[in-house]
Image (cartoon, rainbow, N blue to C red):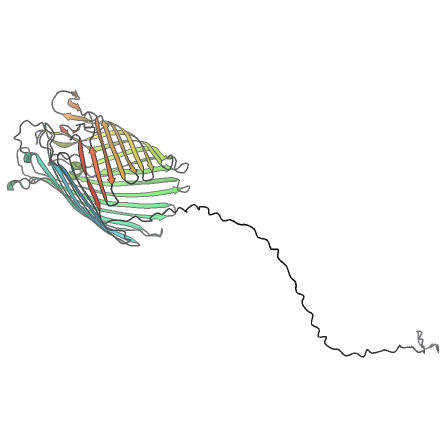
Length: 559
């Protein structure tokens, strides 16, 4: 039933309906939950195999063996090395080395050598000689510094044989000479790895050099006695790519012959000559372009004291070079020079047939040089260059006629301009083959003398060695010289006169030496050395020919 009413008291419309709605009854499932326990059987699956048999055979093949190259990182060292031999004209040879083995801290050793000859040169005075030397050395290595020291003694006996033998009664002792050489030195150096630190070296040395003492007691002082002292210092500092350094050296030489202010004869008087050199040598080295460009500049400031006078000299030290194409070509040029101390020892090392009473002058040189060097391959290197310079007080050896019978020499001093052109080449194939060749042309312009006496105009040097299976070792040494002139004092065959001086051409020198060594094992070997096998009796000095062909053989031991 429905009813509708209206209420006018409000503004809206309200409808009220009365009715009934039918709802369908709900049924409930009357079931309880339970667990179903069921076992499901697993099926068994079978895979039957076919019964088949295949025939097989076996073949064994060779396996290439593996090759292993073994190389010792360090070869075995032996402390001692002994060399014994004898040559023609009864020439005994003995040499012994003893050295420490590998050590990071200590090094030490001794070297003893003797060589003598009892042979003569046909038509000349007795020419026997002997040379004996002993050298000791040692050192200590530390992480930041090292110390070195050495001591030596040498005895050299000879005869002034440079005169024709006119009578058989010539007494060999009357032309005998013996030089004694004793010295020692030490040095201390730092090697700090930090570039911010200053590294330095300090060292000193002393040397005594004497000539033969006369047998007469009253004449014992009438011989040469020379004492030489030296102090060497250097320091260097690396700042970036630059290295700054300086050397400060002092050398003092005391030469004495006889008794000062006295005379043995009217011409033979006592000599005392002292000379000293003090030099300061600052340098700076700059590198650019990955070390391809190098420029060094500095100066050697020298104070030279001779004959009671001291003079100052300044020698430039400038060099520039540039590496091209990974060191294939390295052009270089420079300006340099310096002062060289001349002593009785240094002169007799060059010419052993000197009179004992001589004048000493220090030698100065200034030069300019240029060239190009490089490596054409990893085995082949070369150098081509030239030098032009001036040398003051150059010692030239001439025959002495005042204190000898023409069988001794004395130095005279002159100033000369020199031009030199040089070319060299080297080849090395590991340790098997080594070959070096040098060709040099010299031109001298001497101020006072006609020629630069006994100095060669053309020089050629060839050296080579060959190692055959480490069993046979061959060596070759060839020296050629041409253009040497000697000053003589009388005309004769082959003698010319130039500028009121008599000149003799000393001829061409060909000195070739060859040797072979057979190594029985690493510790025992035998050797044969052939000297002057061209058998040329050339004049090393005027009236002083060398011995002709010599053969020397012997054995060596390592233990």
